[in-house]
Length: 83
Image 1 (cartoon, helix red, strand yellow):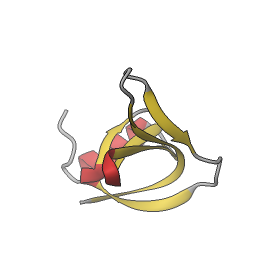
Image 2 (cartoon, rainbow, N blue to C red):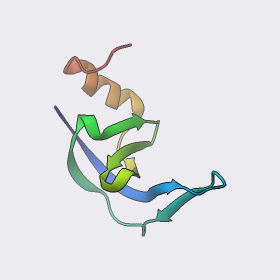
Image 3 (cartoon, rainbow, N blue to C red):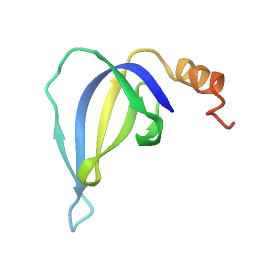
Image 4 (cartoon, rainbow, N blue to C red):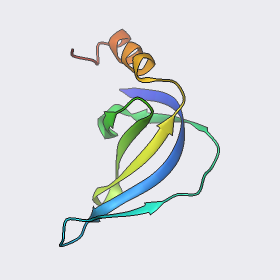
C-alpha cells in the first residue's frame, strides 16, 4: 500500500553516538514536492511531520501539507488505521 503527500524533507537522522546524542543532517529549505510513499516505510506521523525509514538505518523527517486528521482520514478510508 502507498500513501501520497506533498512533502518537504527537513533532516536526516543518521544514528546516535556513543553518548546517546543524535547525529543528524539538516536539509536545505526546499519546496514542497508530491511523493508516493510505501506505507511500510512510514514510521510515524505527527501533526506536521512524518518520519520515514530510509536506507542504511537512517530516518528522514519530512514536513507534509495538511494535518494529522487528514492523514488519519486517508488511512481510515483504506482500512489502514487501527484506532
